[in-house]
Image (cartoon, rainbow, N blue to C red; front, side, top):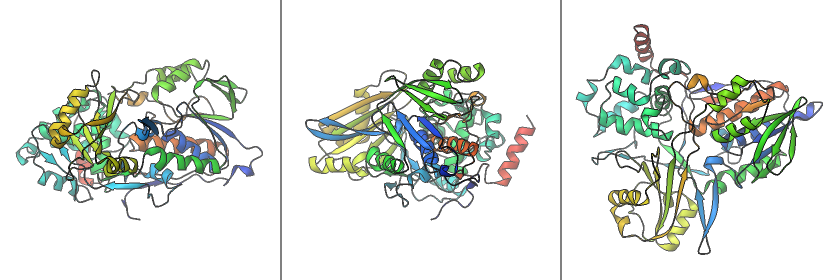
Length: 506
């Protein structure tokens, strides 16, 4: 298998291979069946720990979950929208390899075109994989980037973009918002809109609300710090079928149990352990608990759990923020989208749209429906909404960008609005809760949880899940699991030197 030869590996801690060697088998309740919770459960169950996963929804996967809905007697696959499984998501891929070592449940999206309001189109197809040549080639062929624009960039102030070091980048840039940082370094506005706002809005946030350090880390992960490239994979079927049902069967084979459709009210301390109180009135006894919920769920559980953790930590949880809402509009159309259309199109300056996905190009259920009905299944995404999503505005943008869809009839549609993603606002890094909490035996996991590695989004969720499992395994003398990441600092010694000079002159 090929990959970035400079990726970092963090070896597993040594220990006993299985909990059967212990005097008593530890019991852990994992609250939340998303990526973070399932990863933590996998790390523990594989070492023989007694694991029970409690999930409030009736499906697994959290924000990457999938389910089935009915329309006129026909089953329709549904989820919360497109997710890109990048090649540098090493720890997430390690989880998925438990059920498919070759990752045949994923298929490559070979291009990720971006189009702005003036019709200029950028592409990531065929770029060199090795930094900085990937960036040089992208800029050389881009209609958006012009040489005279780059001559105005403040190279010294911009050096941190190409010389990211984690966690140092947060100490340097977390106090600044992404929009101000890009303006201060005199990055060209058109290029800024295309190349950087895409990263910012991956966090469902406007650049003015996002930490510049988080933006720089994203640029490092996906572009200048890794040779894995920006080409990504997507599941070949709906998330439940392709990913989470197979993983559930795998975990059940290791003795894990699942309670779906069950919420958690609070966590009480009980002697040397915990009692997890569910909304059905049950008390699940545990030696340890992993809270792997979304931000609102974590805040609700901690607020209701009197005496759980120190007051300072409880206040830290209460201060966590949620990003503005986003909308996903899925359309089942009675006419096909033109064959020349990409499976995924990123947009800039086409409010309220941020991207368009043609699901029947890669998702099995959507493809079957499209073939049976001679139509297509299209998804519109709108991020960082300031008001209620506008169905008509989204459709107008779709018809402008893909004119053939204007003649199509909408056979069925689903409009989802959600607001449960974490917000990484300027100055928030030091206040983010970590995996290890002040309460012994209580761990946190999720994409909102701080970890000092260059990871983001789904990969942060998976990485914190492995870390939570590793911490408990270490306490019980059991062997841990290795972690991986892209390089933890910029690849170019020259750019790191320039960034150091910029910092020393401030």
